[in-house]
Image (cartoon, rainbow, N blue to C red; front, side, top):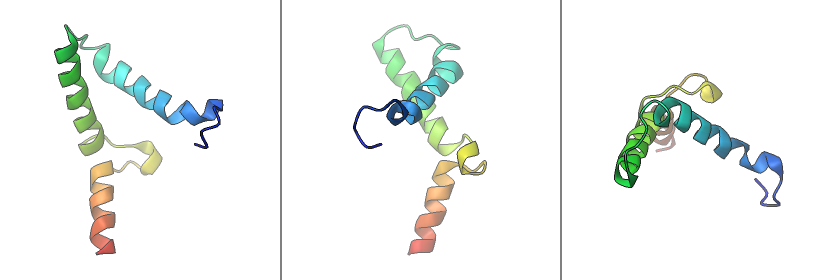
Length: 73
């Protein structure tokens, strides 16, 4: 992400929001702004703490981070 406005700069963010929309928002449409905030908070907690990611060999990001910090100490 070099900040020069290239199309590939947004690929990671676009993919994240696609996951958010298809896995949470389209299945549970928010009623108002507060409900949207709560749905997003719930999804991002799930995304970082429970969901396995193929980009990091089906590991959970929180566990991978915790393990790497433990090894560094």
